[in-house]
Length: 537
Picture 1 (spheres, rainbow, N blue to C red):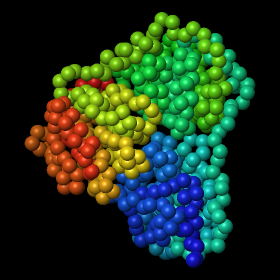
Picture 2: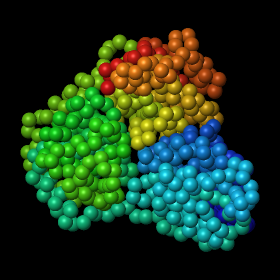
Picture 3: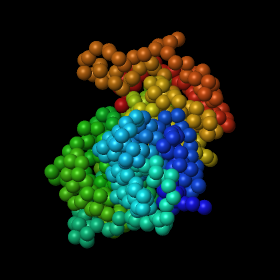
């Protein structure tokens, strides 16, 4: 049987751990898709390239399988810009395969043709155009770049002739990189001395620690050294959030910041563990005082400029933490971190009456501990990320770096595809679901019994709150209203799922329990009052 360029591409991805490819076909990628299929990658048809990229990410979070997105030339590539930018900012090793016309043809044919690489280069780690005779080498470079250091998206433009033509190359080169090792000894010695002398250390951990699977090491380090831990939203679960040392997620809530920032200011040493401030709002810029020692453990050199690092430790996170183990002195003797944890819990308990607090607390009680949740961008995400506790990493998936809308449903679909035995629950605002409603059809087509909770308040609430806070007129943020707008329950039925409207906690609990036994997706439209998030976060 003749080996084609598409076969080489498929084999390279399979060897790197890819099991699925997500996207929408076009004539320019038919040979490419055939090569992926021949290599054992299952192609998942989605309704929009943006949704395909998020499904690929959700699947990667659950399985570790290299995420692959496929798009045809022109509009297919353009449709995927948002999710590729998200992969860059949320540190996802997305391989983005696109079809393109051959170079000679592009000189005299312009229909749907533009420079894919020029458009994508600002939002990817690298962009490659494969060439006959070096297809395996190009794929090896792309995979190595996507998965090394801080993960991120890499674009691979595949000319039609490269995919379709016979190729006599040897097996793809194995260039993907090993995990980072230990930092230099002198830097480790300085960090060790600072921690040994510290009486009030505090740790902040983030997405890089999640991507390196450093959770068990971080949990053991914090417990054995009595160091309280704050995480970013993507870092939730690195330490079980029921642990007394865990101060939960942070970065977007001013209410949480008013509790956490004074605690951080009391620390004499700040230990940053795979903490990438790309998730954080402006209030987290330069939060450390001159009398504090900042130790920053990271897989790559930091150039974000958000804060200083007195002792940068570039290396493997778990390896570096193990090298920093020391005899524990007496720490935080006044109980400040315990007081902050208590204050945080009280701050986000919320009122007893029906509203977003009741929605989140009710579903947390009903859903099993191993539930994986996803959160779309909006007011609900900030409150949810403060209220929902995670016993381990990757149990709450969201767009934290880019903060894009319409991510929660496809993230949930990908997560369910990757971990079918786990309950998966997507939280999304009404505007967010309307933006990406087509992926409900994907859930139905793939038989993915995801539970979706839509917070219906007929407003772009987070933006409306900012509008009011800046004393601007209400403009372009409210839509629909009682008896108007989208009938989400009917929409769910139209797409092959089960839909229901709820407006009280008891009905919500009943419907959520029923959803756990259903073999198709369930959409619960939770109707909450307008301005229900005022003062919530």
